[in-house]
Length: 322
Image (tube, rainbow, N blue to C red; front, side, top):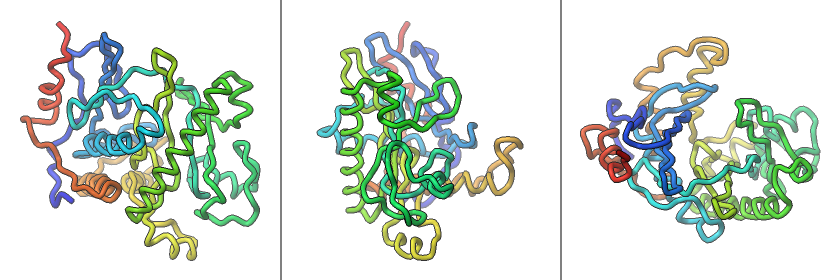
């Protein structure tokens, strides 16, 4: 892993006036091109508690290259939106209409949000998302088999709501054929990810997938796949002891910065204090460590260009419009 983190080498945004039809999300800056493709530029912004917390060096490159690793290793299971990678932080993808159902696959009784199966199980629920869970499960225990726990996608800023397969069809969110295809592919993707993670000494606990339809109606895997931002990973060597002791298994994810903030304020109602440089550097190291642990490859930061934005601009100059 990179031994020192240059905190000045960041991509806080990629707002490029020469590119058409911009859309600026929480962490990605996107542009719709005239030929029906889309540039998705991963900035180094980190989002949690419904706000931007900080800018983390190399985060955008780590996530783009990690998603690339998984897209390459799962293309035989499900076609994806990728056309090319014009820059380490950039995906040129086919434009898709995202399906209005978020597909979450879970292999363990885990989670912290109100929609997680662990939260609901602790409250006494045993039938959820159309699945019947057995009695006697403990926190973070492996499920008898992986399950899909779909939620509605709240495009308007509302809250996602749990769904069952029956409700998805009845509400017209997906057709039966779409649900059959999406659910089968999601479980196959998760099985591939879990097997490859196990080979690296990791446990893929749960993940979410974004599926969309292209102009021809084909269902494509979009957004990202099996990154620390969309997935929960545990370190396999520490799982058994943690499960036995009833503690949280060791993991790597952006909880390192979330935990720091949550220990100092209620981020939903109070101002977030300035995050110190050492915490930003530590978070960058977590992302780089995750990349190297998951892929088995050494992360090589791209230091070309006067700044990351200059490099991105240069690599995308061929897409500029007059």
